[in-house]
Image 1 (cartoon, helix red, strand yellow):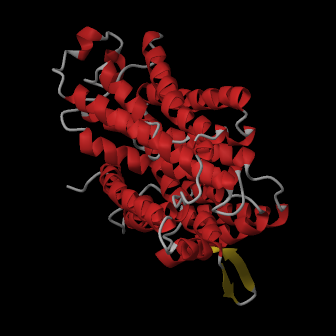
Image 2: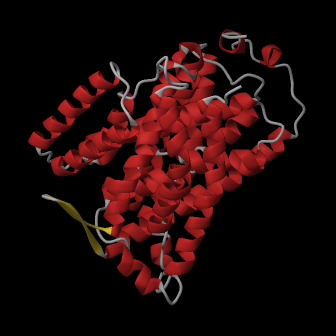
Length: 410
């Protein structure tokens, strides 16, 4: 029996957490070693891609941000489409609680950051940074401490993180894609529409998918928009229905083929490029700068307050319910876990404060993201570890609102 795409996704993303952690640690070690100057010089070095008349010249840092990260957003887009059409997000009763929790998990960090911005003087532009949850790290930590916890918590976390990613992508579109060049953008949209129409009528070989994605990506670069947008849009045109001559649909095949590359190459490279912080000459004042504190507390306090508060409110208002067989302490542990915002938070930080990778703002962004993510990870591990050892009670008896959600399928 073939494994479900979501299960494959969980296993791949959980396993990639170790690769992400190793890449981040390696970046910190190199940035504080005798090779520090070479590391930062490599990130700032320009490299040219030229195919006939097509020429792009970007730094290594930008190639990773706009090039490789487009693959990450393509994978996220494929997962979003699958969940909307076939998975958890297709059932409104299962969708309500994690969606509301995700929205609360974006509002909470924004409120904490903006409050600290007014009271401490943190740069206003940084408020979107603590809004994101890192799927790979969160699932990896859940895998380490999740023994004895109900499987519904894993689905709740995944669904919440997918909606969170969708919100982060929307923020990138609204805040960081200004000054578009409309001509290549219209060409990109036209190519997307034409390719989607063709793909749903005839079988498109893999090389043409690669060529189509590359063309849309190039036109997006010319338009001045973030490549994350068209990467997700491209995922939406990939057919989810398998043809008679195929064993699985193009969407499932793409998810299966891209996940290992995304998990063990793209994200670790991004972590290695963005997590390098040199502590040489770092003063106590910079380590606790307003930007650092606002990001760290936004992730740690804002996420747990927003996610848990929205989930509890959804249950209290009978809009949604707790995950099946889960206690509120376990849901609180997941809320803490959502404060791990490593990859996407660093990505938004690059967009919010463009400049050199070792600029003061980028150093403070990295310190805040790393600090807030570590606090959230440790707190979540402790709470979920304790919650997993607690004897389970009958959830229906403890929470009468569970039945409508839990009983949606059998």
